[in-house]
Image (cartoon, rainbow, N blue to C red; front, top):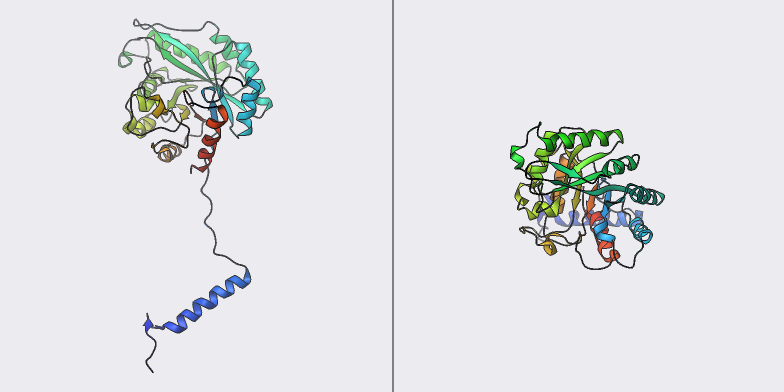
Length: 303
């Protein structure tokens, strides 16, 4: 009788019987192979900008209830009177949410003078204790940012604003916006470096960074902004798109071809622990249809 073929010097029949025996033993004992641990989830607070949930037919209380129900850590809000902003912050906190940012405007003339709402100092005082970051989007023609020096009026006034905000434990972050003086994230970082205050920095806004054509430069730009980066905004977006193509640059987080996981890995590499928010400007649909798939997608993203 011919002998059974051997594998690595082991009789095949004996080898198969051994494997089968081990499988039967495992089944009878109820044991299963050890499962791989789930991926570590992102620990940064994830918030929703009001552009994503302010819709007709929903009261502000209903909006905040929805944000809370879906598991967001907080919201970003728009510029209002100090009294109204304080009220919204308190209503957030009653729900376990934070008003993590508030969007405020400034204007720079070609001559280099910067102005903002006369109520901004009182707004800063009203934000004390709420952990709210003051977003400052800076419009107007402005002088060339490359010409700015520490002694220039814009830098001096922004320093004074930062010093005032620090008295109320408020951080100020430049919000880059396509078409404005600080449209480019790199320019916003340069300006923040000139201001050189510990509570003054920049906000990274994915859709506006893509719109300015800086997609390939994002890792380098974030690295340069490491010590100034205070807050981040993301959304689903298509890679390779620039200009104001907002339907492709602002989508729910579950859509788009841009590599969001790579961006989040870069932020982790930089040690960024601040809030990350969802920009929902111009996305059609009701608030739930925008926020729910976004939160589902966020929870699937690895750290």
